[in-house]
Length: 285
Image (cartoon, rainbow, N blue to C red; front, top):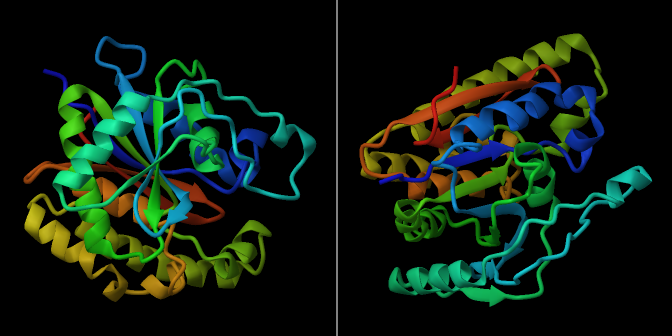
């Protein structure tokens, strides 16, 4: 039996990965080469569908896209015209959306089906690079405005059973860093001394985050991630009440099995390391 993987990937900024932005070179490579290997694309074990938890859809209770052929939702502004002509014609999966809702109800979670929600750039930007063939159906899912870590872990636990049906769980966010005040100097190639100092802070945060996320025991992993705001520099990496790019990782961690070993890889983004975490799937070189 093929058990589908879980992967909390780093999707980059807006449509920039699709525009060949130099700061996204490593992320683009990983989306084109590493993530397809983890998902086993191009093999007989490729997932039959993907549930994609996006940082760019925030709701009070879990929301699940249930349209058969979702349109694209260009939820960014001020980019070149070509970034609004992107197409990603993968199908939706209404029957899987209904199954997710039922699984959530069994976990005591109230979820809503949304037949009209379009795929935001947390979906179509990384997936255009990961699977340009667009031949795997996708169900998009929101994160919660409350940023309640336990609720997101329980959401992941409710999704876990889908893995046994070879339905992959993908979290699309930027778990290592999403704070525009910190990112602007990095993107502009500002003061080298400042960037070196910030990398030291970022490295300390990433070490603590990786220890928490890769803890194999479910109870220990859950406890560590429930307290993620207490990790060093957490508020600097994700400002208070602005942790939506961290939430997909928590959902993914909740979908990992007790004792399941996590894999990691890192990409260099404007001089700092950005981590991706995954469970199961094909092995990387």
